Image (cartoon, rainbow, N blue to C red; front, side):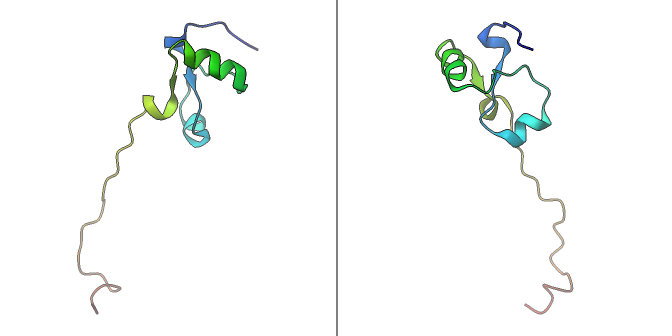
Length: 68
């Protein structure tokens, strides 16, 4: 089912993994419609989400690294 929406309210899915993680109103996966919405100002999901990389374990002595 399609829903007509403003470009500011939809997202072009350019990263399928992110598209599966976030429940967003998406442009149909048709190149003509993606190009149309992009020309009207719709953003891609890779520009909308923020990726943060974080180191969880900072211990320097583990059994694998102790010999170095």
